[in-house]
Image (cartoon, rainbow, N blue to C red; front, side, top):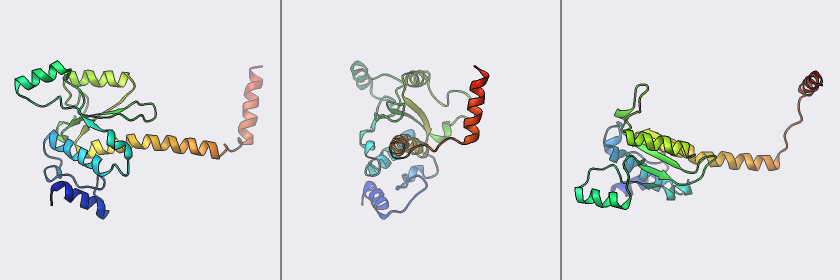
Length: 191
């Protein structure tokens, strides 16, 4: 049985782990491992939870942060790859955001306080640009944080749908008589 098949069987059995329907890979159980290993766990979780969150089918990785042979690096640069881009993008509109961008970091890089949280200058510049442009950008320190952020982002749409549905089927309760009287008194003060 391959690792992915094992994760799928765990998801199918309904056994819950602390961060969803699947367990992180062996290298990350204690929060250790490379940024790559954490990102692989996030993508595995996304693939296994597309039934629960269909929008996850659109998540993709931006392979701009690895060390490459100089010829490959030059070719990618010529194609438009830029340093500092976040690692993952979920181009699905939720609430006021046009997309979710996720910068992956290992848990060891989590800042105690202040600073840029392990972000390079280029990553920090992209973060500021994406936030200013109206996107949601998060820095996730490990697979657990990334998955929590992705789920929270996807739930933004559910909250809006619920609010829209309830506003069309339910009317607001009438105002309390005391508040109506107080509003009238305030209006008299300005007459």
